Image 1 (tube, rainbow, N blue to C red):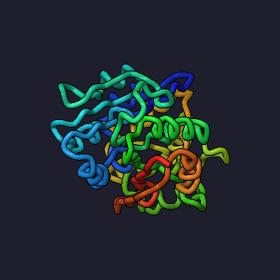
Image 2 (cartoon, helix red, strand yellow; image 1 turned 30 degrees about the vertical axis):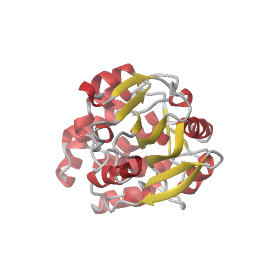
Image 3 (cartoon, helix red, strand yellow; image 1 turned 90 degrees about the horizontal axis):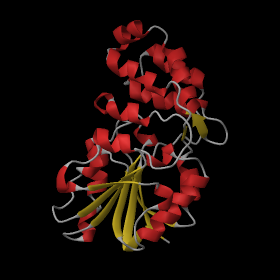
Length: 271
């Protein structure tokens, strides 16, 4: 879930209410959660954790019972829809670019696709600076990326793959379309993604029958209509460069599911 104060009609509350319809690669898989969990032993029995957003899989990623876990999300509606319940984590409504946390107060900060909800590159740099500020000595940042391939895939290739039946899920289709149509500045309007997906899919009932995809999952694209927000999908090298003044890469895990090469979990340390 996002944490930047972006203008316009926000589709995220609608998206959060449909969280049960979301699947990989848009939603973290068990292997993505395992990549985050693998960072925990270095911080002992009581790590101080930060979750960017309120992604349920990350909040429930096997943190020790004695961990202090804070989840930060911009939208109160998103927190209400899928935020943590009970004592496992504290959810705060705030902007990731101005974290309401003391310097050196976090051992491990994690997020799932969070950079793609921000404006590239300026918001990436702002977030990197804030994460570097709040990281304790030896701390880490583990973020799963949604990164376009270094050589852009044309929309015609996505259409051909859909016609050939080689796209395994509607979620993968959405991200391939989004990455294919993003402009040179890497910031693509959410509403434009929705329109492009709908134009490619044509008759929804026929698409569902041909692919076996759930009609409800296909219909969830309607939440993109009217949104005035944007997503960003820079290639991984551009992400690393944007964060590079504040954070240095120390690890990378690439999952094996569909589009896994575009969804690595990258771990950074403070420079």
